[in-house]
Length: 163
Image (cartoon, rainbow, N blue to C red; front, side, top):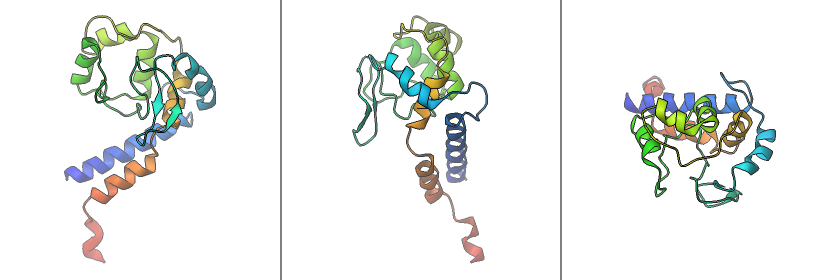
């Protein structure tokens, strides 16, 4: 049953990330092409480097790597030194959904204060509307098919008895 739930969660996440990247998700919609240009503001502090070490966008190391951030648990990049406020938010089990990333970028300290943490964010930059940037981040994330195929491999073969 647990493996089935993991499969279902992975499929739902893949569908929602793909829908957001296409501009058909709920809440804030964004344009990944515009977001790629707008990400220039972010790369002073953030990079996007895939799991194999390939740089999608070279950038700074002041902020965490944003590869795969959509759908990732808050404050979960291994080895990154997060502030106490965002760590407290991460301890709630919150996952970075597109709408939450947009909200965070608009006012990081307010986000922390209203989602289980307290105190200033280390991110001092505010973005009026980050929906394009979040759509870009979703578009350069790991392929959703890989996540669902991996979960499907772990799911029980309920139909195997009927073959």
